[in-house]
Length: 179
Image 1: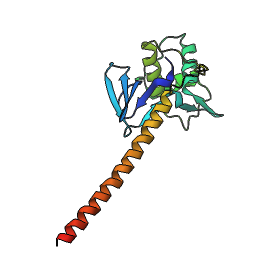
Image 2 (image 1 turned 60 degrees about the horizontal axis):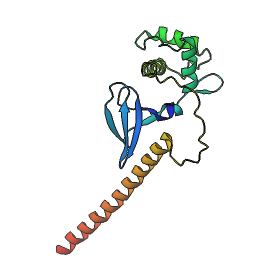
Image 3 (image 1 turned 90 degrees about the horizontal axis):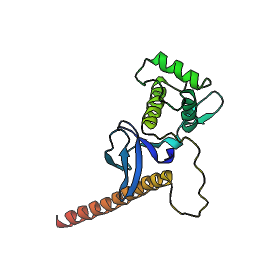
Image 4 (image 1 turned 180 degrees about the vertical axis):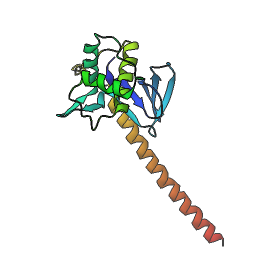
């Protein structure tokens, strides 16, 4: 499995794997405990394939950072994310010497190390760029599913508001006529 189906959901610990699209969002499974959660448009979701780390010259995709950690650790786990801030920064400097120290915080490094260790424990160590599908299969990738879900949810919320205000207007005019 590639990073295209792995996501972080704000307010929920750990990482999640995209399973299915549902009517009001999508279904994801926790990589930490295997529990399934329903994710709607109100959740802030970040696909790991869309995250990048600032360096002094460019933004480096997270998959490249994971590859560098994997090379440094020979495919094994990295240091614990619970070590001190100084140890985390020193470790990350060893992995990515040109990371932008002003824009990459210790909390960001902690997440990267924690995510890498979680993926390694689950055996998800394929950090290669996904190959383009040339079979003509029209299946949507995870980012398209998430974007469609969020945009669809926003559109349906807007139409509900319009319907509610119309109904409210009708109720007011009916009440005014009764007086």
